[in-house]
Image (tube, rainbow, N blue to C red; front, side, top):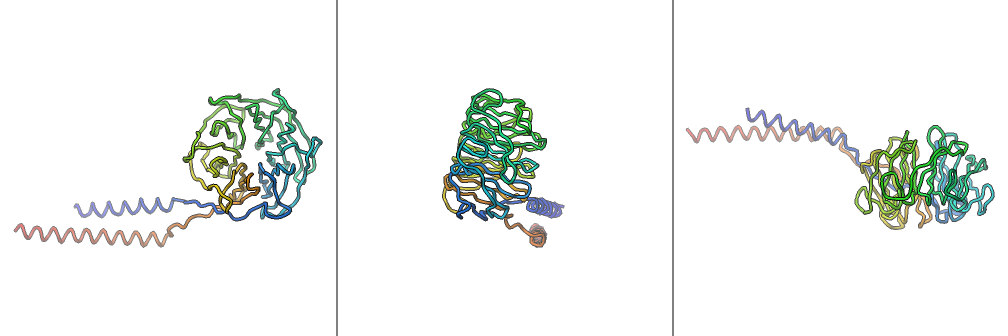
Length: 347
């Protein structure tokens, strides 16, 4: 009877192991291309980045006072903007996002306003001025648009988030300076996923999650270098599966989480080589799952593609199962022989 137990336990182990290996999906992100190395696509302290539904890439080229647009394969398409206060000019373009209609919104930090453009860079609208009142900004940093067209702006030095209609009409705001839940210390990044907002709370080294109406839901992170810890989190991005990407600028890495803040993955170290970072501040994900990272100190954008690590094939697992089963049979058979000899000695 004991031999049958050995066989049963062995096969149970094999089944559990095999299913766990099949379900495991190891991830590796590889730098596949770099923007910023040609004359047309050179940057000067770039900051924000966004990707539209067609895969076109928009980069806030802050030091050059312009927005640059690229195709999904990295080909330069066009740019617009210059230094100034007029329409289609910028004091410091730092944040950028694209709505479902293809309109491009730019956070013009030093001019304390938002500007709206077509995907070809034609000026459409603007709103905001310096101040702390409704619809006013004090060095805004980032922007996001939800599926209904509502616009959320990270009002950096006012330590708050402001919500607007798609026409730029003020609706509500939440947040104040501090470290308690629902407070901010110079917030930087923002993304929308379904009905939730994720805010990069720069000075508090954490991510906060809110409902679209401003209700605090949860938070994660603290100062440090371990998984799930941050040193000045900047830009945020979300993929089609709801996974959250954080540009952990002080740690020169990207961290990946699920929508409740559970750590999944990370990559990057300080450096100027492929796959390395020098102050990553912006991050975006396209519909294919490619991740784009803006490095403000290296004046470049790196594109990362997800490459599954080598996993055992079904044939490999079958061979493994048969080998373990054969080993179990040998062990059981050896047990029979030993038991039989032991009985003979007793006689």
